[in-house]
Image (cartoon, rainbow, N blue to C red; front, side, top):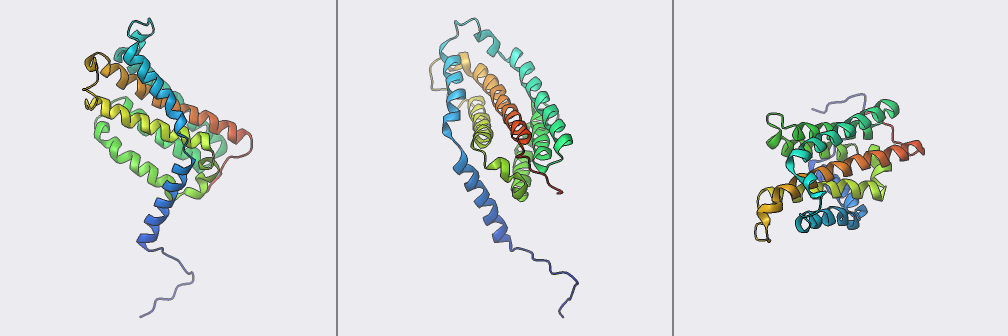
Length: 210
């Protein structure tokens, strides 16, 4: 029996949905500039080789566990303010992303594992609303900051799991590198929001009813 409705609803097959997501990933990857990784790489090298520096003390966990949440709180506040001003999907998405990262940074129960489920869902949400992300995804610096931040986060996971224990004096700099680079990743997210705000002020904001 054929069901007739007043409206034609095109439901894409599942394989097309995944193909669209894959195309979005490729498009974003093409905009990524690896030079952005010079910054966290230089910081990592400095921490590993300059323990005599008076600034080295501030790479300790006791300091970084204050700096990290402070940076993300600023990111959440700025993203939420921009969302209220511009009412665009992109800033709503940024706010959700930053809240997820902040909850993890504050070590709420379940977030250590939950972040590995939350981030893929947040990325899927962005891909599913890709048209609303387009003006910002087309901006090379924004993409480079975003991807660079997550590459930095991934590197800190490898440090935490002692993947680099074969390097000299690993025990001396391991915690410092992990905590400081994690904070640096947060700074890259904050920088992405600040650059996005400047784009919106220039008239490139993306508004969406979704």
